[in-house]
Amino acid sequence: MSYRSLAGLERAALERLVGETVEHFAAQEGLTSFEWKTRGHDEPAELTDWLAQLGFVPEEAETVMLGEAAVLVDAPAPPVGVVVRRIDDLPDRAALLEAAADMQAGVFGHGGGGAELLERVERNQGGTEVWVAEADGVVVSAGRLEVVAGTECAGLWGGATVAEWRGRGIYRALTAARAASALARGVRYLHSDCTEMSRPILERSGLRAVTTSTPYIWTL
Image (cartoon, rainbow, N blue to C red):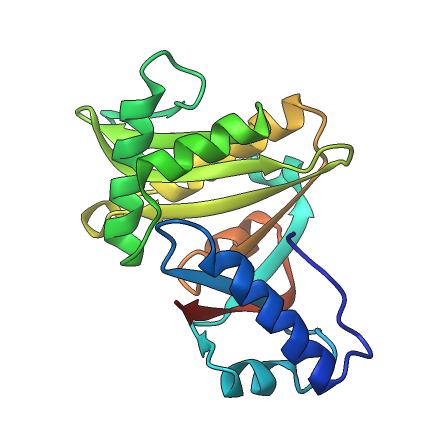
C-alpha cells in the first residue's frame, strides 16, 4: 500500500495498526527493516510524534514534486560517451539490474539489491521501467519510472548519480528519457519524492513542490 488516510485515527487505533504492521513484516524471511512513509499533510497531526515514540526513526525529509511529463522531456544531451537506456526489458536484465542497484546502494548508503529490483520489475509486469546512464559500460546514474495502472500518473523513483559524475546534466538526461517513455505510454503527470540535491533540477524543469515526505524506519 502506498498511501492510506489515517484522518480521525486515535492513538490506540494507531498502536494496533503499527502492531499488525510490525507482525506482518517480521514474518518476512530475511527482512530486517521497513519504512513507514509520512506526508507533510498527514492527519492526525500527532502521527510523526507517535511513530517516534513507538520506535520508528525518521530519515531526511524529501519534497514531493508534481507536474506534467511534457515539461521534463527537453534536456541537453548527456556528455559524450554517456549512454542513457532502459534495461529492465533486455535479455541480460538480471546482471544489469544488479549493477544499477549496487550503484544506487553506494549513493544512498542502503538498498535492496538487484534481486529485489528484479522481483519488483517482474511483479509489476511492465509497470516498472529501470533506466541507467552508462560511461564506458559502467552505470553512473539510474532511476525508475513507476506507472500507476489505470491513471495518467507515474512516479520517478530511485534517481541517483555517483558523485564524480554529478553536475554534468546526466540526471536531467535520465529524467527526460523517463518522461518521454511516460508520455509514450499515455502518462500525463509525473511525481517524485526528491532530495534537496534533485529538487532544484525538477523545479527548473517545471515541476512544483506540493508537500513533503519523511520516511520513518522500523528496524526488526
